[in-house]
Structure formats: C-alpha cells, structure tokens
Image 1: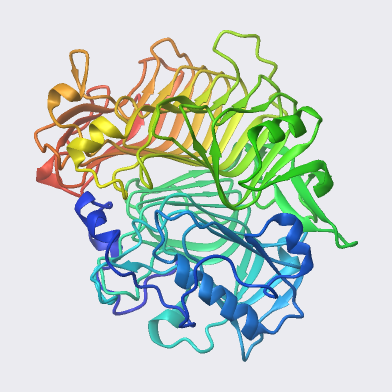
Image 2: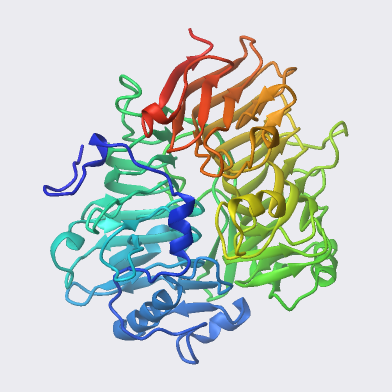
Length: 634
C-alpha cells in the first residue's frame, strides 16, 4: 500500500474531511480559481481553425481531434487555453471534447501535460486504450477560493469532466516539487475515469500539494489498469472492474466491485473498504473510435454477469460496432422533431458538445438504440418537458448526457419504461443501460422537476449517475428562497424489478432522495446529502415522521441489496431540523444492507442510521460517522 508523501498537511486518515458547504459555494462563484496551467493565454470557446483535423467537422464545432503528427507544443497550447477558459467555469455553457487519434503524444523530454476543466472530455480514439499513449500527465488540481490562488484549496466542486480510452505514461518532466510526485485527479461528483492504462508513477485522487483543506468528495473508475492509488481525502469512491497495484487511505465509503488487487474487507470501518469479488451486472460505456480505414465508429460493449477485471485484456472489448453513419449527429441547433424522425428510421443519436433546449420529448422506441453524448452534452427541459423517454424495450444505452430541469416544472427528466404495471419487455442479458448520465435541478439557472430519474422497466442498469438538486448556483437565491424555487421531490424512483445501480450519487431532494419500489434491486455504492435548506421542521415532515430518509425501500419489497451507503446531514438554514433515519427498509430477511453510515457535517441532526438503529449523527460528533456494518445483523 502507498502512503501520502512526507510533509503532507493533515494526513486524511487522521482527520475527518468535510463535504462542501453552502457558504463556501457563495464565494466559489465569484472568486478566482487556482489550477496550475502551463499556458498563460485565456480564451473563450473552441480553438480556432487549424487546431483540429478535417475529421472533427463531422463531430460538430466543439470537438477537437488531434493527430500524433501535430507538434506537441501546438497541442499543449490548445489544451492550456481550453483549461484556462474552463477551470473556473462551473456554471457556464461551454462544452468541448478533445479526442486523440491512435498514436503517441509527448516525448521523454517534452511530455504532454494536460489539465482538465469543467465540461471537458479527454478521450482516445483507439479501439483499445493502448492505441493512444500520452507521455506526460492528465490532471485535475484543487480550486483555491482565497482570491489569490494559494490557499483554501478544495476539490469539492470539481464536477463534470471525463477521461477515457487512453494510456498515460506518467512523466513529470518540467514539473517541480510536490506536483511531480503523482498524476493528480482531485475531483468530486459527475467525473468518470474509464478504459485507462496508467503506469510509470502513482495516481492520487486528491491534490495534497495545495494549501488545505484539500477536501474531495466522490468519483468513479471503471475498466482500467492502474498503478498504486492514493485515495487520500476522498470521502466516497467506487472502483469497478479494474486492476490496481495498490490502494491507500480514504475517509468513509471506498467500494470495490470486480477489482483485481482490491483491498480486502478487514475491520470495517477501519479501513473503510467494501469489496465485492465480482460485479453482478455490468456493461461498459460505449466509445467512439477510428477504424483502420479512417472512419468513425461507436463500439457498444456487451453486458456481463459476475465480471471481474478489465474488458479489453484479451483484445477489443466484446460487443458490437456501429458505423457513425448509422447515427444522427446532432448539434444544439437541431430540433427534437428531427432527432425523433431519425430515431424512428432506425438511426442512433450522437449529441455533440453543447447545451440543447428541449421543449418536447426525445422518444426512444426501438430496442438497442444508442444515445451517446460527447463533451458533457446537456439537455435542458423547456416548458415542463420530459427531455428523454425510453419505451419498454431492451438494450437501449444512454451515455455521457447531462439533463437539466427548466424553470417550469417537469414531471420527470428521464423516464425509462412506461408507467408501472405494464408488461415490460425486458432482457436480463441485454439491459437498458445508463452510463455517466447526470441530472441537475437548479445551479446554472432556476430548475423545477417532480422526479429526476424514473425507472419503470425491469432489468435496467444504472452505471454511474449524479442526481443533484443544486445546493448552490448562480440563481442569486438564499437557502430559504431556494427551497421554494428550485423544487424537486425525488431524485431517483425505481419501479422496475431486477434493477442494478453501480455508483448511485443522489443529493438534496425535498422528500426521499431515492425510492426503490421494485423487487430484487441492487445498489453498489450509494452516496447522499440530505437537503441543506428546509426552512422549518414543518417543511421537512413525512406525515408524523421527522424528515424523509435518503434511501427508502418500499414496505412490500422482499429482496434488495445495498453495498456501501452513506447519508450526510447539514442543515445550515435551520440547525434545529431533525431527520429520523438515513435509510428505511422493510424488515425481511431478503433485504440486506452492508456497510452503511450517517455523518453530520456541521448542522442539524440525523437521529438514526436505519430503522431506528444507530445514531445520532449530531453536532457533538461532526465529521465522525455512525456506522452499521450489516442490517439486519447476521
């Protein structure tokens, strides 16, 4: 196991980390940020002509494609300018993808050192991750909120960025001191690392080089080969179907599923590891690649059961290849009518980077349809629309898409399957899959939605989502105003049977954040923050019960499994507010929770962990979780 380098301030295993706080966010949107870049020029929007090759034109104006024959200095300058524009653009509208054709980028003497900002996707275009090699580093550092860029540095709002399908040969040439000690990926929610092969040094999921407090809160790795990993101050993290050389540190829930080299469960919660030998249901995210003839294709991996390790160890990931010509390649100027027409003709949908106003529903009615977003393509509901609806058909894959609520309330932002009780045409061997699909209610603008994600179909796989009713933003709202303005009752409602979630992050909704009505469901890592902003206890009542549990399994469910779950309380708007339980589940032998916890982040009280057991998480133990190892007890 690795350890943090000597001299690191506040070794994370020796102190509690704090989640992001509303008062910090108020500063975050107006103060300067601090992320190291090698360039000095700040530019807005995509690079100018000549930065990308001709192949990028069919992928929209906000996609830049690099070729290994381009000078490293030119590529470095383009990426430095992009990071300068995006490093603090948390609530902005710019979206971009930077894609690398097969080959090697950077040399031993002149490595390519990439910094990744908001709404940025960095990805290789090889059929295998080893087809694209970055000799250098691809990194995210803390944002520093002091105005001068040297202190109060955190990763708690480092959201919405993607790294995938390439190899990184760590080379810190030109970097001095602490920053040369690892490849840093200091992030929190809505950030994924997939299909990576990293070697030549250590990977750190926190930035221990900046001047504290160095907090970080949550992320996701899948289908990757990694060196020794320092989790550090990460409060919760899911690593799935990966190979690791070692893992050290971590604050609360660190969950491993189907990971070769994962740490064993020994003495939970010290260390705070939850380990499943295999992943019961998995499907890797679709990826764009360039074929031998120079044409673009999308590889759609097959679903796997009881899987372990990476999907590409024996060659190309098992699955099917779809030519880009079989996709409707959309830009924000395209209408929903045109998208639906293409879908009805049997085409798939590729959403190029940008923000799309969606005033009617994108309807997916054909089995095995693929909707793939690049560069955090964002669909914003207009006029109370439901942006995406999937019929009861198997095999649909939606990946890389963010869905925002609009100013008029939507009944649901993404609906999978018709209303409960229909004869669902599902397939356990070809599950409808949501990969890196994110939701927002508020944040960049006022948002309203009754439910963010509703799953009515059976045999659905949710593979990494962040479902967020915003606790901060640019709407200019106080906490009390936000409660009555950015409204959202439930983040996730699961009505289908045999639904699996790997990486379920759901936060701040005004009733149960997650409601699980279907039978035989499985969640592998659940992370939640209760809402910060109930004005009074009367506003936060479930009938006669004080508050709404973060995770509610319906009383008539007979089989359900949860591995690694946390619910956090922080009620600065009214510290007297209580929540009775973090988790509420039926008391039956088939419903089992493994390694769950609650924690107080500085205000309010969460009285119990589950069904009146464990607790309280109150201000006498801020930052010190209350754990239940197994419910019911064995």
